[in-house]
Amino acid sequence: MRGRSILIGATAATAGLLFAGYGVGSVLVYEELTSIGPCPVGWAANSPAAFAILGANGRPLPGHPEFDTEPYWMPAPEDVRIPSRDPGIELSGWYVAAADPAAPTVIVIHGRGACKRDHTALLPAGMLHRNGFAVLLVDLREHGDSTIEDGHFAGGTEEYRDVLGAWDWLRTTKGMAPGRVGLVGISLGAATALIATGLEPRLAAVWADSSYADLPGYIRDELARRGYPTFLDVGAVVAGRILHGDDLAAVSPLESVHRLAGRPIFVTHGEGDEVVKVSDGRDLVAAVEADGGRPGSWFIPGSRHTMAMVEQPAQYEERLVGFFRVALGG
Image (cartoon, rainbow, N blue to C red; front, top):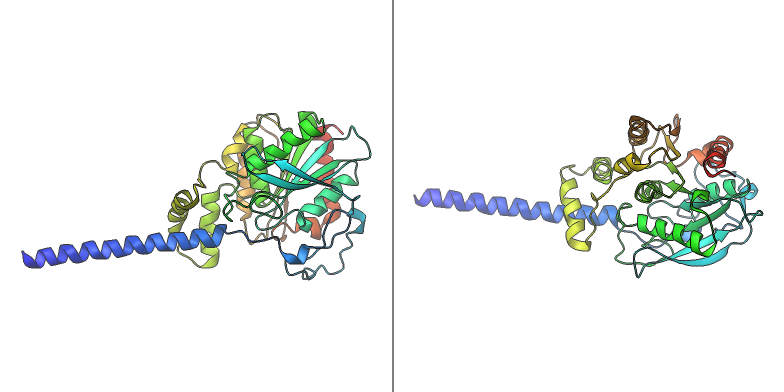
């Protein structure tokens, strides 16, 4: 009897240690995958008026040191502060008006750990602006010069309200009609844009470059990519709820595209993407098609994460501008 009690006690202690270890591992994984630092200093000199294709360290990207960005430079922007739909969150933005005051506007949304100074936001903005569109670039919460709450991103499940705040600002401050405003999202920005479009039925059109389909799935893939046990994915989601009140599974891009009700969407993804699997992009397209939609899509052989705009700029611009000319009527 005594031996049995010892065995039960040892088993309980072991289970407790395993549970505690899982909890600690989950918190560490959550912190590593969601922590956001300042906008990289390597992009400090970038602005709509002059920018370069640079890595976060400020050096030219390998293989693209001679990329000429000058054709995509824009006039000096209007520095703006925009309220999110969440009280207490203020966004830093750059608004670049079009030559034609009646032109449509596209909101450009950067990726995780980036900001409006990243070339992946500035380059598509420049492509659109030189073809007659007004553009608005914003820093999402926790990024760039916008409000810092807790230094962690929520995978679009909170940030979508920042995008909708920017959309509200264009309508109330710039007098834009809802049907004349579209979204361009890059990586995290693409996921955020898809969620925002799904939850705001008046948003006219969305371009998604390198989006994940759902955040828990992306976390599993990222854990595997970094060599961590994938079973920590559930714990990481729970850690987000407990530590910061972020429900990373609350809503997903894949769920959101089912709410588009025929509105225009374009999905582009590099087949060599090493960060977000190209199958996520294909899943988004399939979901729209399953609802009877006709999404535009471009899957680029060999292209890495968000690199198509740099590797094939002419084709990227042609598709991007063509999509919004039809979707926004201008």
